[in-house]
Length: 145
Image (cartoon, rainbow, N blue to C red):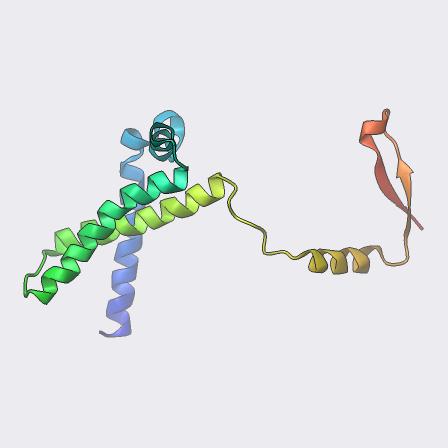
């Protein structure tokens, strides 16, 4: 496959993802929460939101796996079916990313030693004194030079 043809497939898929992810909002995003159904399923199943998502995602993965296995048996799928199954799988991966972010299950890439180095560089040569705004709960360190 030529690069131009592949790039056209990617662009078509991006348009499909935008359409697909927006078209289901009315049905699945109750109360404006795009992840509502996963959160509700997690409550019902007494599971995590990630596990609830994974169970629903498996349906799409199995359908995609069936397409691959059908090829091995010389059975071919329509483009409409391929677009539907691949599109759903991509959207479900994006939903998993959203769930991991929403549930605060993403750790920072910033390392403590990197933060310390930046702080040392910015505040080098400065000393600090406590500064209070009204009560002791609001104590901050102000640089003095």
